[in-house]
Length: 113
Image 1 (spheres, rainbow, N blue to C red):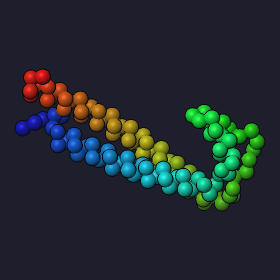
Image 2: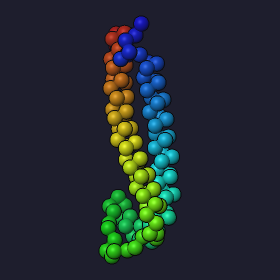
Image 3: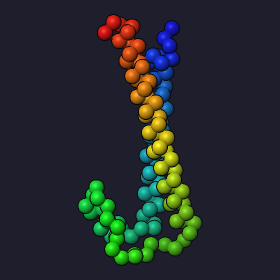
């Protein structure tokens, strides 16, 4: 029996779980973007990101499109969800890399590679 560290099934399950977390992150980013369009002026945003990857702050104190605190709070919560999941996915990816390395070592040892 293979040790858990060298078990292809364990790696496959972890990889699948990571893939599902990435799908969730993609959905959350989509929700965030949809919410963003209700709050920020597209013309101002375009000026800020026209030199992407550099983002420039607006030169004026431009007003938001809304003053609805609930909608703004919803946007901030979505930002927090995306941020937390990005951090969690980073840790999961690190763990997945470690599992893959152990699996490769086990395969090399098992097949004398």
